[in-house]
Amino acid sequence: MMWLVLIIVGFVAGALSGSIGFGGGMILLPVITYFYGVEVAVPVSTIAQLMSNLSRMVFGWKEIQWKKAGWFLLTAAPLTALGAAGFAYAPKIPMTRVLGIALIIFAIIKLTGKIKLPQGKGTVLIGGGITGVINGLLGISGPLSSAVFMTLELTPVAYIATEAAAAAAMHVVKILVYNKLALMDVHVFLNGFYIGLAMIAGNFLANRFIRVADKKKYKKVIAIFMIAVSLWLVIQTFI
Image 1 (cartoon, rainbow, N blue to C red):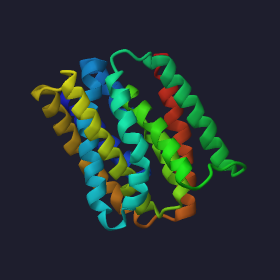
Image 2 (spheres, rainbow, N blue to C red; image 1 turned 135 degrees about the horizontal axis):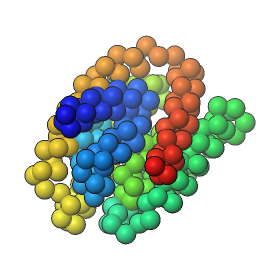
Image 3 (cartoon, helix red, strand yellow; image 1 turned 180 degrees about the horizontal axis):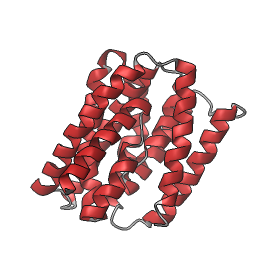
């Protein structure tokens, strides 16, 4: 029964993240944590999300904006390592609440169109750094990195694939750090691998949708989902 639940959740998480670029980790972490505890759940989720992001890269390979992903990773990669190193010590609940509330505010502003994040390398570099720290500490940062990549005015496929390329690199950094901290073993890898396969199936289904999505409507859908997922992120800290 446990594995049936994990496979179904993995598929749903893959379909969601493959459609809007984030949300998979937020769905996976609570469920995996329920079965294994947070110290196992974060490394397992990292393996699964790495596989999911690699599949999204493959599905949109020709449209990946490598230079833009590179600028993002310039600050995101080293600060992901720093955050991952502090994973065992960070006060995760208050940090998660602050992150969720901030993202809800940003998404509402994005929907109203009154304030926009400035476009340019500065936003990508600063956003990458903040995303990296939070990704390393909490294991979830999809809405934040998506908010940064939304400023680049990419097509839906390019947005999904480029954000996935950056996320995959951050997951590799985390895996290396977790391995150094003795948080990775064969059991963790296999659990993440099987859930990752379910996520890839969900990604494949989502890829068919985003190729025919209207760009303007798609951005509104992303903002709405960002509010819903971030709200769930805050609520689950009280459960």
